Length: 352
Image (cartoon, rainbow, N blue to C red; front, top):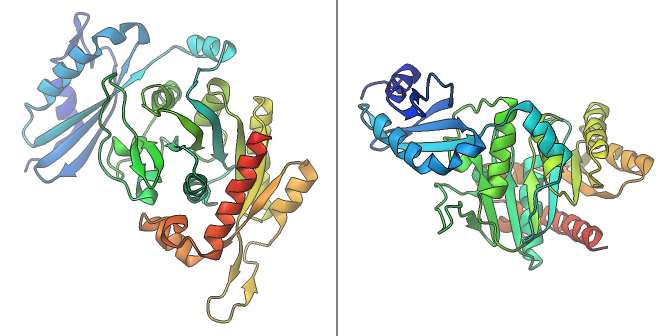
């Protein structure tokens, strides 16, 4: 089978015209990635298009698919349109009003100041624990750089479209799930410019048929960049939950995340200490590998709720990798009970 290249894709796309000029020359092709399939190679495209031109997207999509499918070795094509806006337009949108999400009672961001602290694992297990309370729950993977929720939730496949051309979330044990990871291969690097991050995240809210939800849990990428600012400034967040490990360097980054949310008037709903300690499964001796209690002390210092601590646990890690979250695979375990306790505290604070 011939090896596909970005150059071959761009060459084919020069046959696709938009207002008299090809989309490559107009710099509308924002990303090209490949994914192996049984019958060949799937081509994933990200196309930037001005919002006011959106009425002709269907015709443009057909042109693109026809052009790419003429290339030998291509088995399928997936096109993601991002509504590109100039920086001034973004500024105006942020300064005006936040988007209206009338069917979602609460939108809660799960955030961290740095990567590797277990934020996504926390988001997944909290979403499931909330659903186990009988709530209508959605889980949005807003980490467009490295979406991991599909793997952790054990979900694969592209979302179907409803009658209004909105994507239907995939479902797992009562939780509606949407992620950019359903649209691109998990092994492909996602490279986004600032305006593209804004557009992609907005699509995951506006172009998804979430239906009626009591709560939408949003897993943010780590840090305080474009994705976090987009969400804080344009989505009606009920608040943010910060995940940190106990050591000082992690708490330093957690403070930055909390500072960003405060500057954008997003309430801090609480702090969770993950990897709080390690308990030997054989001898039951406890080791504070990363220290212990730092997050609780920080929460008390800042006057915000401390929601709980989750230990460093090999089963939790293994089940996350296997797509079998611990709250589902071992609901009677001590850790699953802790997630349910945290979910209870979170829901109580939202309803207060």
